[in-house]
Length: 175
Image (cartoon, rainbow, N blue to C red; front, side):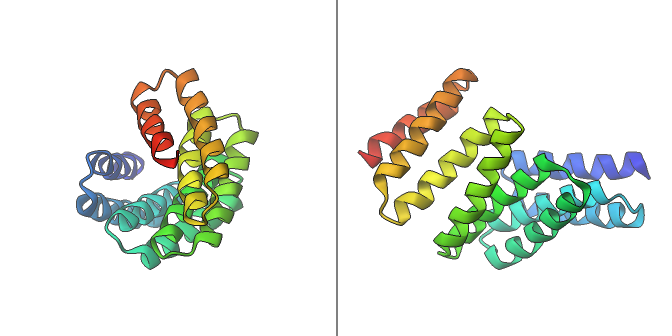
């Protein structure tokens, strides 16, 4: 069962990385069923996170929020800070899809604090990009610019040239 659950999760993540979100959703749902049968709470949280993220990408924001909140609850129960930060960042993006900007900023800020606490610069940079988008939606372009500048510094430190270029484009748009 362990190999089957890991394989199902890997397939779901692979589909997600290929932007094949419907297939990622189906694979993650299979993974979730396997994780639950095996009573693997960590795997359950991961599968719920992929279901939530795929649902978000498919425009099913309320469904995404439900699954991401479940992933967050399990990761908190397990003390898994990285999965918590992931779930909170993805929740922020899902809240933006429903124009719940204040909730998005709250989730993204909490995610950012965890990424900083565990010293994950990649997670910080990605979350700062999302946070900047939310800040722009509130009209706070100065804060959005500051978040993007922070994200750019982190991506440059990580030699992540693709994401750094994306942030530079966003900075030009913010002005």
